[in-house]
Length: 238
Image (cartoon, rainbow, N blue to C red; front, side, top):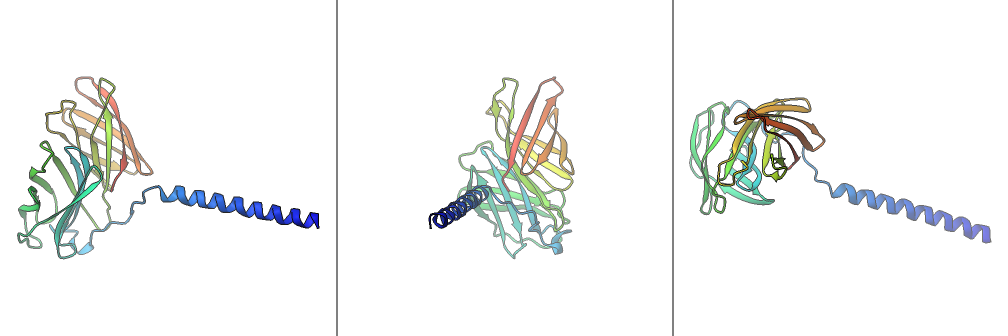
């Protein structure tokens, strides 16, 4: 009888341990953000001004997604410091036509969206984001076979302090982004570059940078023509 009770107790403890470990692992997994690896862009708009555009925001830090008629609406979601703001546009736009000055608004905040007839060289102008006087936005078009991933991060300056943001969006082969200047009252500097597998490189102002992509993280180094150099890091946010 005693041996039988011991066996039952051992079995119960083993099951309890397995259950605890499973629950713990489940909690660990759920705490990690899950990002899509599939583009949301529709194939029918791959060569059009219509479609999905993704990018990054500075003037604090964040990301942006612009939907130009992908679902028969014109809307944008600008996420600043983790809080999402929805913008809408009421002006007309035609498929396969140049789009200039399409204004997206949210209350007193607004920006203009511009893009070629084929969806190339998209850009944002006339940015007015209340509470963010030096706001900047850089975007690129997402294609049905080429997802755009956005990362927000920081970089170290000569004084070894961390500055933010150092934000970029990466597609299969293209990089665009924005980096804050150490002087707080200056506009951010634009970044452009290329992506190859899990590495990337580019230029920003009078400097250059290169880095690697590991899981949902980016890390790398930067330097400029004055001989200044430092590091940067970031995490995927979109």
